[in-house]
Length: 183
Image 1 (cartoon, rainbow, N blue to C red):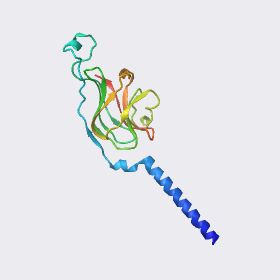
Image 2: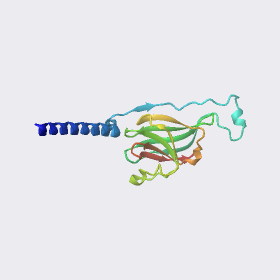
Image 3: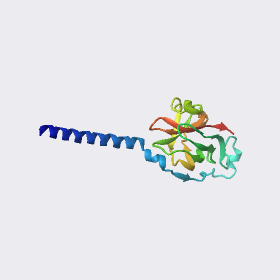
């Protein structure tokens, strides 16, 4: 009888351990996100222009009265199929925002939008390079499809960054990236 109880306890313990490991694995991997799309349709942000009409135009190097695209790029696929356009836009108040348009990528756990100084490489060689150098996170990816804006913090010198990546922070891998080319 003691052998039967021991085996019963062993099976119960093993069942609990398997359940805990399975639950932790599901939480970590979040495989259901591969079948869930989140579409975002944000308009280009409008920043407040300088208070005096014509003041910005009179000062050399001042921000223009309308948003200006200062760099752009086209997303390429890395770990997951990714397409869309990227624009770095200077708003009338001098602030910058990163705009993703026509984004189409897979959903995943802990996706971020990063400005980086890493070169964009095609294929597997480009999957893991973006955290090797300097980068700044602009926040969590709002949706895996659509048009969305990410304000660039005022203390970030945008000229120091040459690329954008949709970065999976959970697995340290790029879903897709674009080289920023000045216009």
